[in-house]
Length: 150
Length: 412
Image (tube, rainbow over all chains, first blue to last red; front, side):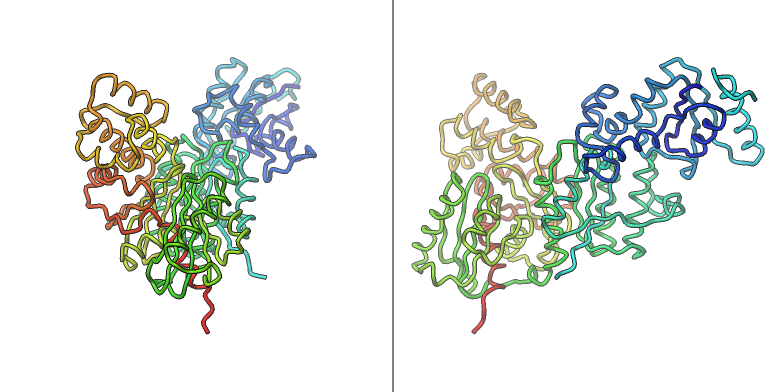
């Protein structure tokens, strides 16, 4: 089983595909769940505290907006932990969205720089493209260590 | 129990910066509640098409969709708070344009703020309080004449002021540097009472504003405890006799600056802040001290000089001080240095704050720094307009408080 970082991080469809093919998806759901289930904090809605943007300094300098650094405190450790990644370019908002264009650029860059197996593909806009989209993801995930054979 | 004022939050990055509890806390302290206006996915997808601003960040699209819903009446609110990350260029464009859009297309009071993870509820409190005042107390702010015998107190960061008013006239004033809040207030009250020749017991209502307003207001049982944004803008248009139509109020204070666009005496768009004391009256105090003169002499001295002869940038008070020392060491005249210091402070306020409000003439300068003629001249040059400095401008908060407090005078 491989740890696969998904982009956009909030995509439930990508998360489900990764799980179905035998791997562990890394994305917003996991990162936020750990925070909202941690007792003792009171920082709704995401339980992110002013300490988190400081942790994000590992990934972005202090002149980078706090919202970017706060997001990077969620995604940065997951990118470091990931064995592979899937990037869906220009996804529809309903497919998944991380809110901030600058964070998106940084996340994609850090994933590419890791030199791990990485699948980059465009968001599909027709049934045929959709079928090819899922097939490509299936093939990629099946080829990762511990993946379900295609 | 009065229903809380509902403040719509249009934000990007606040949840990820850890400042949401601070925003909620500031709202709670002024009996308001912050909420996100509901919009649909279709609203977000189409956001910006009518508005005309294409953005890449989805949270900014969401902000635009929410603003459009508020303006169209699909979402209801009493006021709007726009908050985006400090140093984000894309968000800064959206923040400014949305504030202007909401101000022009609706009657909702709106304030914007760019936060960092260090933003605290204390920083946000005055802005939230002003939003609540404008939303809830329009009737109070509609007052145009002072009635009865009232006292206004302004407990500022640098100075404490008191004014006593009777039948629409100022009859007594008091001014002291702020040391201990209560002690400074006692001193200025005594001065104002002495000048007016009345006894404290004769005062029918008291209004308090400024940083020390809560401590002081509770201690003396004030009828009105009010933040300085609404009080100062009200006082400014009252003293300048511009209570109808548009005006812009600029108050360069000892610790922060305020720029307020006023319509019919009610603030519409306002900013409050100042990145560094280099853009405040503190830098001018320091300049006067370095030149070995009293602060009251700085303005006339600056009027004799040519600021353009001296490079000075007080974006940061440390760099500004370096410029000051270098300028004097290079043999520049005190007149030119004084003029350059005034120009630098005016320029910082112009660049950092006046870009965030819509300048509407007349421009009224108030607060202690409005007595520094060199600063008023520099601001007029930058804005290419004649600045109005009304009589008693240095007592603006106290006059505004005394004026508004007369709404609490019980008529026989």
